[in-house]
Amino acid sequence: MMKHAWDSYRQYGWGHNELKPIAKKGHSTNIFGSSQLGATIVDAVDTLYIMGLHEEFKDGQEWIEQNLDFSVNAEVSVFEVNIRFIGGLLAAYYLSGQEVFKLKAVQLAEKLLPAFNTPTGIPWAMVNLKSGVGRNWGWASAGSSILAEFGTLHMEFVHLTYLTGNPAYYQKVMHIRKLLAKMDRPNGLYPNYLNPRTGRWGQRMLLLKTSCYILLFWVFIFSEMLTLPIRAFAAIERHLVRKSNGGLTFIGEWKNGHLERKMGHLACFAGGMFALGADGSPDDKAGHYLQLGAEIAHTCHESYDRTVLKLGPEAFKFDSGLEAVAVRQNEKYYILRPEVIETYWYMWRFTHDPKYRQWGWEAVQAIDKYCRVSGGFSGVKDVYSSNPTYDDVQQSFFLAETLKYLYLLFSSDDLLPLENWVFNTEAHPLPVLHLGNITLPGSEPAQR
Ligand code: DMJ
Image: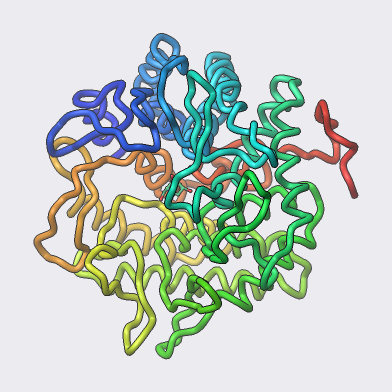
């Protein structure tokens, strides 16, 4: 499947950000602005390396060496470019040792730094790579920055300081962390919108997106300050986790004082997060969080199993007799997302229960049957229709994440062991840094 996805992109979309597998031409979205930066190449090279697809990896590396140039007049998403490009380049560097990946990651990071020039130091969501001018999306609670985005720069930026000796990257993200630590936390959790001019929360909305919480959790685990993530777990459980009438555990969305009994595909990452958290929790909590991870994995599997295509919808409800099914037409699509498979993989690593491989295999068969087309893989618009239409996009995260997690699910545990590697939110593995033993330039000595 990786060969088919890559070869199709190579043939029809080379150098474009993504591929339209039906129209057989390049594709891009507003997260990359008007740039043509080969997002699929950068996002996929570490997967190629891990899978031993050496020729393809070399081809990708050559394109990056010769063509990847960030001096372009394009307004890009700071978060997306960080997780896909900086994460992808750093992972490729650590895995292969090829200097070019590090060099390109640092060049790009320099272009992102102006995004932090705000009155509070909370970065803009978008920055123009040429002019350095930043701004926010109008739809994000009147121009706020988004927690799931600016809270997910930490890992890559700490690695940049570690690799270059330049303290600037570390200081920028530490500033965010310190500022967050001082802010009020309604219900013990951070709302999703923060105004970078005033430093005040925007709309009070708690959404568990695939980024900030797992990221904060990892960071705190590895900085040996466990209390905050464990408190956050307790608050998530208390305010967002519920059981349906049919006995399915789900994570709802809290908006304006009301919990909507709806779970997004994106929130399915939390099964893996709880399993990983169980591994680092105090003994009396470990079994509990592993069990919670297993329950989330089960619910997300049900959301796949209750469809015609055996692929999960974008969001599913637990209301008025509904159990893990989408209601609105615009929530019935599957765009090759990884979160459910990501959770299967973490659960497999921590339990070795064969059902996770079984569920992963079901997903492989469904994707191959319903999403494979002659020009690559496409998302589908309705997972409840036996005759679905395609969205005609092969997302770069399909190669970075979905196929990588599937490959790891069927590999042995000594391939990228979790003691030594930590995966960013785009599934790019970076080595665990033991900050207790390292003093980063610009950092205070690690707290114990
Ligand atoms: C990916 O870019 C990342 O997993 C991100 O955290 C969320 N969205 C997509 C996949 O669904």
